[in-house]
Image (cartoon, rainbow, N blue to C red; front, side, top):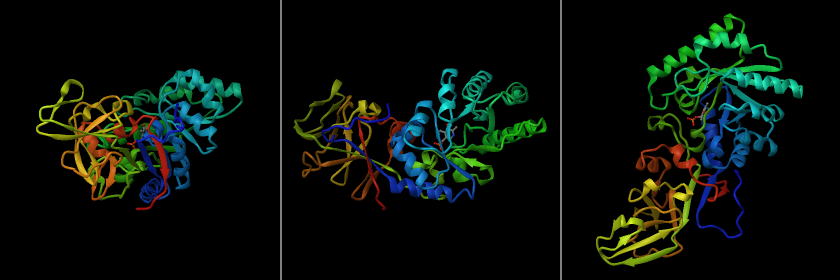
Length: 381
Ligand SMILES: *Cc1c(COP(=O)(O)O)cnc(C)c1O
């Protein structure tokens, strides 16, 4: 699933992944956390950057652990010679317990039946399985209800062959800067931990913080932080730009494959959603919503060519996008077109795209399909 076909023909569309920028981001974030454990979250194929090369580079740069969301990703990391602790941050199914134990993946526990499935499998394989208890403090996605934590531990803490290495939560509204809500959630988490400890249910590693907490709230770092999107050069919130310098890791490029001159009032693309105002030159670039270049960018966004910003026009199709290059008389077929990144003095970031389509950077990056070749470079800028 995560590997791309190594095509014989070099495609026009390439995502360049700058490993030097990744290392610089890991270092910048590590500088914020004293000696806490640094768990690099590389779920969703490393937010579209390619999980294996990113995992290896993050480790080189000093990450202590890795976090993913699927058991498949965890196995893939193990099969690629990565032996440090790997956390599965979502919930596994009982059928996956066999692989979780075999590949020494650290599961998150949000339910009794998962705890029992892992314990049973660990006994069967005669292994000890490290697990982290997840507490729901308000996101209401995974995690046990804090009111039922003690009862849960009475049922599950002493299940055979389980090692409760940690306890954690994931906040709902930290990126939004809703500190009242976040502090309440933090307090609820700390109270839950305290109540459990009173009953002798101990968890050595406590952790709550993703990128935003890593960057902004030292007081909530506890034993470990779990940054994800920040590794790839994007602050979850613009207000954080002055706190830490991050460099975008991905540049998305393609080429102008065709240029055509159209008379005034010509309809362009499916449904004729763009109509030329006068004689116009329209360029075609070979990337579309089938690549994860979102259809909502139709008539709504820009790309860079010849160091200039030009408009996307018409409806984006599965494999192609139209751009208006009327004002660029020198533009030639074969010219480089930058969709995310810098060209000359201009820059388009994944955040700009996210703003145009009312989304977030995670969606823009992680949507890019595997058929876009990832090319790894190592350049300081
Ligand atoms: C995705 C995720 C993270 C990383 O979040 P970012 O906001 O991308 O830093 C951390 N912890 C958990 C549990 C997650 O699911």
